[in-house]
Length: 391
Length: 115
Image 1 (cartoon, rainbow over the protein chains, first blue to last red):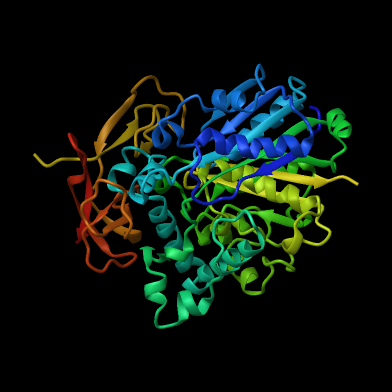
Image 2: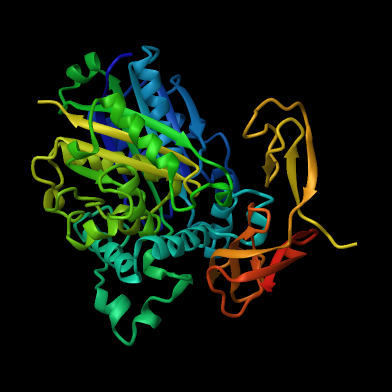
């Protein structure tokens, strides 16, 4: 297997975007192509979840490859729920590692504010089990809420811990010009003051409004190349050193221990094993905090902290910028936004930015190993990646 | 006749599945549809629950109670809750009712009440 490097990255602002879906993907891709200084690629993968349903568009990759004047490169769209981005990066990795392609553009995109909130919620809920979950009106916040209640009972996580994750990540987004939420929040405003119930009502008990990521439009892109090509381009050498993907039961109720996220555990373990790293080697991590509880649970399952102790590390500030293992310093899904197909690629964008030392105010000093966890479904399809800076 | 929700028992190794899957998760040896349909028990205990305030399109109620129930045979299922003040561990009893209405369709599922 050949080593795979990152030659370019690009992103759009995450917000409501009044551009065509393919233009959002193309803009982020154009930034990545300019970053790498290239105008030709061998293959394009476009990660997206909702184009056929939400945007009434199919075969998105064909639109993107042509819009970027990259024809006749190969192109394919990858739909894998909220893990589409990570899955597309994995496909790009396989293409380069196998020796089949030398330069692969991976773009992730979503334009889900084209429909109203009810329809967006329904669209995401279609990833649940059609018979055992979807027909009951289950939403992703509902799954996260039921999971949270079990976590609270078993490990002593409280609404305060959840709010602390929300405050940490939403305020981190203030240092990320591309992030969706550009409004600071405080524990006072969302939890402690008499107005907190108005400011921060329940979405699905015990999860509140500020425990959930916003609904965002946006795109992100990354260019993966062989070692030979990476040296030609003269960009900092960032190696995509580990890739892990794992699945779990489609319906959440079938899991033997409902507080375990086994797919996260296995995907992270496989990524670390491929890279020859341990969780303790990681300097900066992007975890999939679509809901605040997920940052806590994933920080345990990927191996940063023992099971049941993620919220204690959070209390100690170990997951904040300047802590032992800074998590979601660019805002995470909570602050940056969560255009579902783009998220896995946006996580990689943030890690590469950090490893290049381009993080500005949110830079993790001396970061040389980064990690991403892209969590699809309610934990039934997970992709983890490790990135390393080479001197 | 009362409506039922069915679990599926593998004819080769007796492993129960809900929901249905094509290949048995235990023996992985069964042939096409080599399962027996067995009605799920309707009573059990509430494992976890939530009340949802932002519902998907097509729901014409303000909030919806949902929960995962540990049934009397040890299997679990997700259902709607018609319970004012749910508590983890409480005994519940289910009946099969309409849980989702679409323009031309009605979908039946389990709705749990306090036992």
